[in-house]
Image 1 (cartoon, helix red, strand yellow):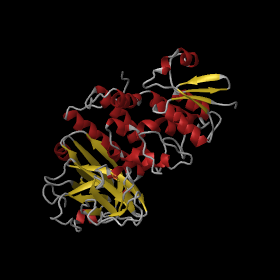
Image 2 (cartoon, rainbow over the protein chains, first blue to last red):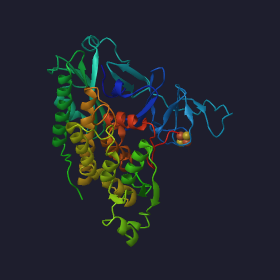
Image 3 (cartoon, each protein chain N blue to C red):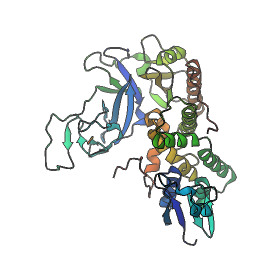
Image 4 (cartoon, rainbow over the protein chains, first blue to last red):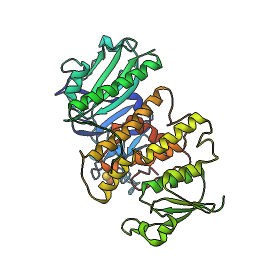
Length: 227
Length: 208
Ligand code: FES
């Protein structure tokens, strides 16, 4: 499945968290990404930099099947090419003005992006994963090194996603996105037909994982009165 | 209701809480602008005569000056059961979150003020951790609500609790917290933005 390093695939977010015609941000090993879904349901992942002035595309919005930058309204189609410049509506923009798309795949309820243009395809035939339909539970940001979290939840060495042996109607799919040195996103999904109470248990378990990982990393987040 | 008067500062998120709610309700108020930065007008004798503790926003309604965002929101919501449920259990839930917005979540408001107006870059400060922890409490709540099929903080539709919480959540990018770290909040922000009568303030993107 997903392997870190060259040619690896990274689980950016739950498919359910990207509605059609919306944009979101993500960060993969310090690389900022704009993630968006067009009206046909296709997900796109680009570097989070507008070809115009380098502003963040993830703050933009989807219009007429294209991603519109919030700043000056330039629009970019599914292949990343600029299709519309509001200040020059009659101009057909040169093909060289282009956002930088990454390879993207949607599997097992998750949106994946490839760190490199070449390299491993995302296998579709992992029997443990493909046999089940996965119900999204939630994602949590954890401010601790991802390696420690991967070890704590029992991901096999070199993997960023695995079916865990946890008691939520048998199966839990956990996927980990390394955001940077000291932060990651943990995505949790349950095997279909899990009772709602079990989904709540799994979400709570995610909170426990977060609290323990951050405590080990010396990061304690406590709400309360502050000056 | 006699004519409403709102003492308002455009850049203040507490004032935005009230402007947003008035707009969602379709209620007009005459605006009196209070120049806080750089004017310091909240400390002027004239304003202190209206709001003795210098608190913004103030809504003058029926001869009473109601001071502070949480108080104004509740005063406006009174008698509108869709925004402030009458049943004891849901009423309790709503005022719980209104209080949270004016309590622990203030850490986030203070982080924003510090980074916008004082240029303080204290990423790992105790204040940032308290602010993140408060955002997470809302995030965790909404993640659980979503598992039950709920989209809003309390009940089946938006309440004054959503409006009390919204500005601080929507503006957290101003102090360096990305919405990508809070998927449940992101989903909910989109739902609030889609409400008829929604208005933005500087710092909250307007998609036009
Ligand atoms: S920076 Fe994106 S349109 Fe100008």
